[in-house]
Figure 1 (cartoon, rainbow, N blue to C red):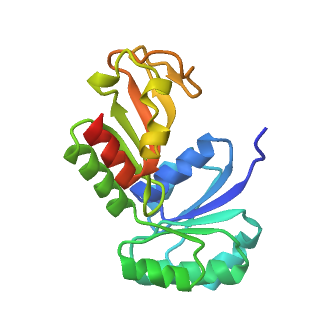
Figure 2 (cartoon, one colour; figure 1 turned 90 degrees about the vertical axis):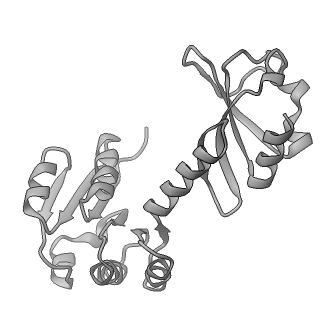
Length: 219
């Protein structure tokens, strides 16, 4: 059984509240902090603890005993409070700090101040939507790194009736099929490679952007 962890999420806007509620629903203890009393009240029944804090300062960090938490999520939109929060949490001894950034410069500053991971929700979602729209048969697109992507595509018409051994996409394109989603909503993580693909199957692939593009163009 997964060990229960303690998280602090500072900033309960749309992004922060989504992260906080997801962690709480997974059974973890979550402390939510925001400067908006109404927002905090709305989250009171969803999280383990909630706190209204008008300012980001050292006294708040000390009074809440945040050094004992497993990780922190900084979801503050404004630059200065975000950077100050990162610095204070790092000084408090938190080893894992995930911070939201609104720009590349913001992200670099957070990294300098001790953030172990920086995410760009608007940019990443924009790329995801753009790729899904730009490629007609890509249903979902997730960047795992600068080059490696996870995509879902409709099984090409030429692939229907053929199996994974016959398609041999790993050798031909350097792409791995990690799952196959069937029309009846079943998902096979380790599908029998000798089993023919069906009409309307969805392939979940992992590989470089270049290799995924080649596969799309040639299959």
